[in-house]
Structure formats: C-alpha cells, structure tokens
Amino acid sequence: MLTISNLHKTFNPGTINEKRALCGVDLTLEDGDFVTIIGGNGAGKSTLMNMIAGVFPPDCGQIIIDGDEVTRLPEYKRAKYLGRVFQDPMMGTCGDMWIEENLALAAKRGQSRGLGWSINKKNRAFFKEHVTQLGLGLENRLTTNVGLLSGGQRQALTLLMATLQSPKLLLLDEHTAALDPKTAATVLELTDKLVGENNLTTLMITHNMKDAIAHGNRLIMMHEGRIIYDVRGAEKKALTVDQLLAKFSEASGGHFANDRMMLSN
Amino acid sequence: MFTSFLNSMPGAVAQGIIWGIMAIGVYITYKILDVADLSVDGSFGTGGAVLVICMSNGIPVAPAMLIAFAAGCVAGFVTGIFHVHFGIPAILSGILTQLGLYSINLRILGGKANVGLNPRNYNLLLSLGNPVNAIIVGLVIVVILILLLYLFFGTNLGSALRATGNNQNMARANGINTNTAKILGLVISNGIVAFSGALLAQFQGYADINMGRGAIVIGLAAVIIGEVLFHKIFKNFALKLLGAIIGGIIYYLVITLVLSIKIPISDTFTIKLDANDLKLFTALVVAIFLGIPYWKKTISAKRIGTAPKYTAVSSTDSEKEGN
Image (cartoon, each protein chain N blue to C red):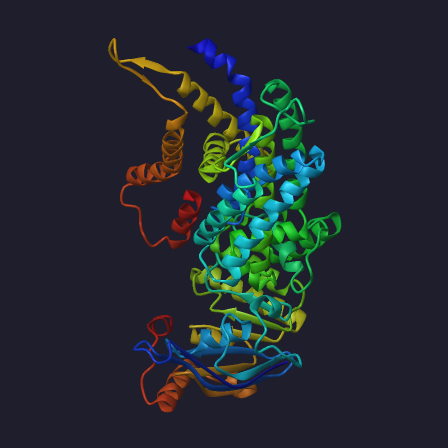
C-alpha cells in the first residue's frame, strides 16, 4: 500500500542550523497494516509523516502510495489517498464552519469541487448517520460551529472526516497528545474502531509506549532520521515498555531523549 | 445646520449603499479569505474609469457594468498571481497592483485626471440628481448580490474558499488547492469592488483618477462598523453581508453629519471640517472600530485577573475571536 525508499531530508542545509531529519528511510506497508511509530525528540517521525503527506518535498528518495508515485505531488493532490489527523485539535477542522460543512469538505476529498450544493438532503442523512456512530451526541448539533466543540470532540470529528471516504492510508500524527488522558483513551478507542471497520492501512505516531504496544500490528522505532527497530505480529504483542527502552539504548547507544515519553510511562 | 444634514441624507444613504457594495468585496478577502487586499484602491477606480469610457463610446449601461466588473476581476487575478506564484505577501501584492493600476487607470481615462458622464446624455442606472431613485436601485443590486454570494458560498467551491480562509492546513489536507482558492477569492472581490466603482462613477457623474484612494479603509470601516454593531444579531452569512451595507450607510451618514457641524470657538474662528479632512476622519474611525474588540478583550482579561495560561485551547479561541 505504501512503499518508501531511501528517503532523505536535511533542513537548512549548509547553515549553522543544519538538521538532518531523515537519513535514508525505507519502509513498506502491507494492505491493512496498522503501524505505530515511536522515537525521541527530533527522531524524524513527524518529518516522515509530513513528507508522506506532501507538506514539504524530500531531498531524494521515492514515495509510492497504492502503486502511484506521489513523491513530487503537491499536498492537495495527495489528499485523495490520505486521511490525516494532527496533534493540534484546531488543525484538522474549520472552527468557523458547521460540523456538517466540515464533513462535506472531507467527503469531497480528492474530487473536483464545482457549483453543486455542498450540503443536500442525501449527504446530510449520511453525515448524521456517521456522526451518530461517534456516540458523542453531536448528531443533533450538525449546524453548530466546530469552534464550539471541545478538543476531544474536534479530534473525534477530524478522525471521522479522515475516514469518511476510506483513505488508502491514514496518517495520525500524535493525535491524542493534546488531550487529557480520559479523552485520549476515548479517541484511541474510536481510532481502533474506525481503522478496524474499514480495514485501513494506518501510520500512527505516539509518544506513549503503552499505546504503541497496545495498538496496531506493527511497531517502528525511529532515531536520528533512521528506523532502528521494526517489529510485528506476536513478537510486537509480547513487548513491554522496559524492553522497548532497552531496545532503544541498545540501538542508539544512549538514553531515550523524550521527556514526555518518559513522563507518560 | 441640521436642515442641511437632513437635505443631504438621501444622497448620503445612496453613497453609503454604493460603498457598502464595495465593502462586500472587501468582506470576501478580509473576513472570508483572511487576506487584507489593498488592490481595491486601484480596482475601484478601474471600475469607474472603464464604465465612463465604455459609455462615452456608446456602450449601454448594462454591458458597460459587466466590462467594469471583468476589469476588476483581472486586477484581482494579477494580485492573486503576485501573492501565490511570486510568493509576495498579500498586503504587498495588493499595494503593487494598486500602484500599477494608477497608470492603467490614467490610460483608460485617456491621460486625463477625470472624465465626466453627463446624466442628461446617457441612460444611467443611478444619479446624484435623483438620490431616492439611486437608493432604490442600490438596494435592488444589494439584494441580488447578497443572494448570489449566499448561494455561491453554499456550493462545494464556495465552501472550499471559506475553508481556505479559515484553516489552510485543513483545506490542503482535504484536497483543496488553496492557491487557486485565494486567486478566485481575489478575483471575485475585486470584480465586486470595480462594479461598485462603476456605480459611483454614474452616481457622481464622472470617473476620477483618485476616486479609489482610501477605498480599502472605507470598505474596512463599513465591514467593521457592521460587525461591531450587529455581530450579536446577524449570525447568518447573508445578514453579515447586509451588516457591511448598513455599516457603509452609517459611515456616510456620520461623515455627512460631521461635515455639517460648525463649532464657533470665538467671533473670528469657527471649527468646520470640509471634504479635505475626510481621509483623516476615516482613518481615525477605522482605527477606533478596529480597536474596540481588542480593548474589550484586554478589559475582560483584567477583570478575570490572573487567568491560568495553560488552557491553550481556549486562549487560541479567544485570540481568533479578536480578529
């Protein structure tokens, strides 16, 4: 479903702020893979995800989604393959637009937008049905501005929008990091449900090692722009947080440099 | 003093409506696209100049208005290209277009600073000589324009434009070409601005090279007055646009009132503002109305006292409201 080969990215090359964010990343995702990504600060997790999404181009390398080369495609053109949820709950929705208007925007992802009504009877019923499944009571507030929702509600809505028309690849960039623990758990549960129901190929960055182990069928650890550990199936299920920390020291020859990650375990 | 004010009221209302139409163009860029587009100072004059030259060359008023609208669209397109494809910040792109349009407008006017359009010789939509009729024509245009925009911003395309102004990241993540959306918004906005310039040229009976100077500030004044006064009751998009029209009318009524005021200081010295003082007055009015939401925020922040700073979500929300 996703093939990444030899991906490199250096920010601010040739300056004092030079930062090698990705140094030759190779990654292949099978259909239906749910991969969690962990790693310290500056490991390149978000850079990798942004590069898949087309936020900025790679220095070299290749990205293929579902058989189509997308390496040089602009962000908005890649959107037809991708569902995305961001860390900041503000980022995935339009706060000044209604819930159903946001859903209508998402429902048109990857299609041309003409002069047809964005909301009609048919898609309103469709939206209502899906929003009901969130179980947040938002189905009676379809004409409420999204800006009035809580962070957790916005994140749940973004997740629904990202999966509304099954994407080839779902990208979750620490999408529960800004939420309180209880809400984060609810959103993760919803993530599992939506990914499972639609059998979505998924990449999820998380700073919580327990979550990284508990969710998905495969785990990747990144360090200094490289994938240093890749584990799947039964072996992944059997992992513990201590083993992961040991793995990290072993592979990187140092300590885990992510305060949040240490604090949350 | 007040009789002179009352006498000039219908004219002020008509002029307020025309500038209110211009303010709707400003609303599209300033409120919907979240871009301060200064090209309108040029495209307003372009609209007036194109209409006067078209009509004096025998083109009837309706097609002349359409050509003026199209000329404005082209101006907006140029600003959009400067902004999106030259990577120039939106404000500077608008300033560049505005500057360039000064020369173009002079060319359109045949090198003259102003060209007249005698209402007796032409079949005009509206004219200073009959302000009540001008008000009626203006209101009909307002209703049609608001209806069209209301419908447009309810379509998939219009919705994409709103999303672009609201949250570019979200827009791109959902496959919206935000560059095209910005250009389209600037095109529509400047088209409307030029259209209102064409109305003003008919109303005053001439096009002037300086007629658009400060248009952006008047447009902002109308938008902001409308918003500050009506934001509690005008929630619907169509009503918000109507707010800009009412803002324009209020602005012109206040201007007319201010011009009719004479304050005797002594036997030999009387303070009386004239038309030359208007730009200063407008600038101050806009500064004050832009300041009101900000002051409201700082005052309420003081009242709450030491509000916790870690509620990042709600603080960004209130920042957004301040815009």
